[in-house]
Amino acid sequence: MAKKIPDGFHTITPHLVVNDAKGAIDFYKKAFNAEEINRSTVPGAAKIMHAMIRIGDSFLMLNDEFPDMGGKSPKSLSGTPVTINLYVDDADHVFNQATKAGAQVVMPLADQFWGDRYGIVKDPYGHQWSIATHTRDVSPAEMEKAAAKLFSH
Image (tube, one colour):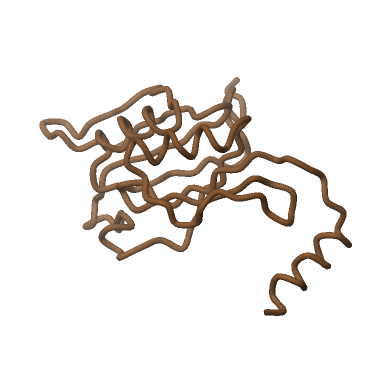
């Protein structure tokens, strides 16, 4: 009997549409030490209809654009409202690795009031990634006070 949730998957698995899936897979390998699990191409074409990679303990699915089927990338849509959060052991190392691989800094890496060392990069395919390491536990009261101070300016 098939498992309802296959081994290795979590309840939520992002599935990205990119304008160059082959290039994106190569980028994610360089930027985030991704491991390619599989890829399927359109018969007789170079387009990837489905690929899966693993970053840390999580899978990420991706495919090339198929605009006629509603599959458009952030580049075709002029941006994305989504940020993928990536918790890592060393945010500084991964942030620098991602920028060296070609990611653009959206929000510089810094210690944040909620207890994470956190920054955001945009990959060459238009997807945003927040890179974080949890550095300290913050109570809800401390977080509310810090947020009020930040937004009072």
